[in-house]
Image (cartoon, rainbow, N blue to C red; front, side):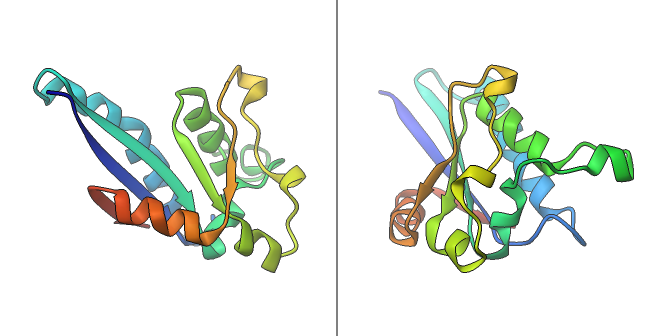
Amino acid sequence: MARELKQLFVIQRPPYKSENPKLALTHAMASQTAEIYLEDGESVVPTLAFVGDGVLNVLNNQQAMKHYGLSSTENHVQMSLLIDLRVLVCKEDLEARGIGEDRLADGSALGADMTIEVLPFSAIMAEMEAADQLLFF
């Protein structure tokens, strides 16, 4: 019998002054490797959701490598899309900060088929209610 363990990583902190957003992205990407410890038919399905100030993590044209010598949070988002993780962003939080969808990270340059899903908060809440494990960062 197939069983999916749904994990939702909720990122609510901005991409500065904390490693939490990048940790959430790294854990979500790595969580798929847990399948080696699962029974046949079981799988882990991680999803990322950016809300509040967390939406600042998904902006494109971040210059972290240029200024700090570190990979950007944008690059982590692009890699998440490349490995087919769902990336959800709260529409109301983008609008409250005056951020248009054209300013969001895009994984297509890396060959990603997945794109960021901009959803109303009510849809993100539905994802929270459906998750088996809810992790806040």
